[in-house]
Image (cartoon, rainbow, N blue to C red; front, side, top):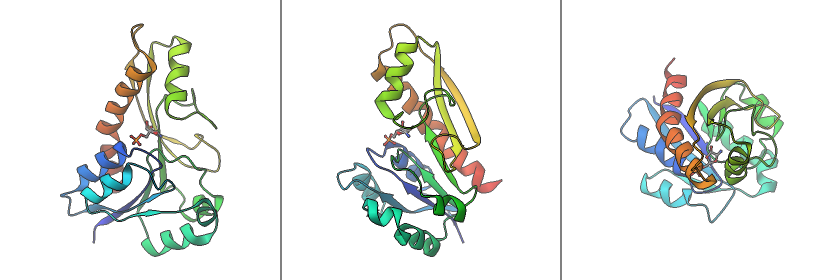
Length: 188
Ligand code: GRF
């Protein structure tokens, strides 16, 4: 039986797509479903293209046992947060220890924590004058961006970079590495 990934995504879903594409022809690992909290999220169209069921959940369901029950039925081997903006309830973290990972678009512990997502992160990197930024893939615990680091890699930031070009560089890194790290975690 193939190993199952459930992805949680709030937005555009380009990382979700990179993961679905990577495992599309795999016989060992599959993206079994995607959960989104945003009906308008681009991830719905992307999921459709890969014939992956995508379901929407409101905050009440997410923070109650609805999501927990769904995941207990689904029995994923890995839960992947790919641009998911809500805090993960403690009940999920406790039920799936070391089975929930997140990708953060900077080199944690820098530029992490509540409110640090998307363009906020890249603007802060630009303003800091740092010569590098990067990505962090980490386990999820009860605190934003504080779980154990699985993988980090960096990219140069040059003076001509804008928050937008930094975002592009970071997305390229994410699409390249995130599916491979997921594969490693599921096959090690
Ligand atoms: C990514 O940059 C990821 O690091 C962050 O949210 C962004 C999601 O982008 N957590 P996308 O929706 O996968 O395009």
